[in-house]
Length: 475
Ligand code: URP
Ligand code: ZN
Ligand code: ZN
Picture: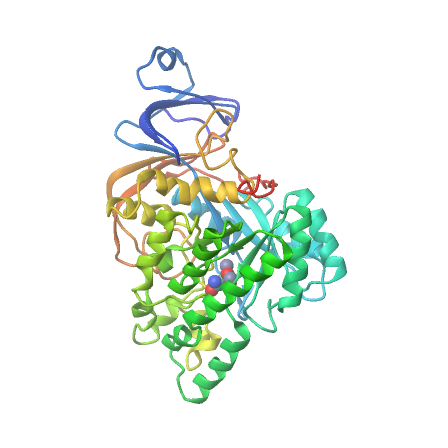
């Protein structure tokens, strides 16, 4: 097997002999890459494929050839909870590549009192020249003003087409219903998509204070005060606000069965309401949050992990398309020096879990376990997030003209997830010891090798900023 050179954007590469899987098809096909894009696909052993010549040939015999993953929810080096997420854009995108993800959409943050522009500029400065794979930005709107609303129009034009708002975290990112309604009204006019952190943060803060006053300080109480019904209530409210505004809605990190029911009911009405869940809600539970010796802090995130029974509803919704996307909400904090800020007070544990490197593998394990089909794996991890956030068909599929973000995936390799072997800059794995069948073998980003048969060959700065179109589910 020869290897494409890392400088060769214009070079031709053939990925030969694999099973090409997209959200819609599975075919034994060869893939021709030229100038960083997919030039053609042709049946393996066809005359057309046999006639191709290239400087490099990647042998994918016995492997899957899939689009690079699109992780539409990451927080690299995000200041949060009195500290900063431990992956930088450099380390986090490198880890993403190791795990077969070739595009991330991260969240730029508007500080209260500042403009969206200032927040976006700051995030560009952090990411510029640092990323191993391509990246785009959503905008967190923390301060809805007349000026902010006007800026939303400009950002949509520039390719920042989605805006996260928070019904949680009063005093930090929280917006009240009136502010949310105004932003949704603006989005309904400019093509933007409001992404909602749907938890009733006002009620939760009361429950937090009551729990702490009662001496309930352990990490597991984080899950108890962030009640599933308060996620469902906020989800319902967000849907009604979006209906009144006439805007679409995307609910992030859905974890509660009751919240899924709200989304499903809205979709049954034909409303443009979409939902995302994350691997932690599919594979972890309050059992992890209750781990002794403060180890439960490793699993503190919001929305919180739920009792195991909720997982079946999430898997079902992924199969029935009541949930469309699995992103990671990658927001890592080290156990030592960061999570331990909350010893004796769970409300001081920085919220967030690592996972950008694990998503494609965990979802492949779901294929192996019979929970989802191979094509649904690619749909929820690549195609749907790309389409949702205006990146499709450039990202999320393997078709002529698409960026040659290609993963050669060995479906039979065995691996054990562990902090000892992962590449995320965090001192624990949320999936420590979990056995996975399947592993990323080779990753190309726009035709350039980033991972080559299990070795990292990428570089900071290869990844480019990608402006996005508006949501592809509303066309
Ligand atoms: O716990 C979480 N989810 N941390 C990241 C911030 C957010 O709300 O997505
Ligand atoms: Zn959130
Ligand atoms: Zn998040």
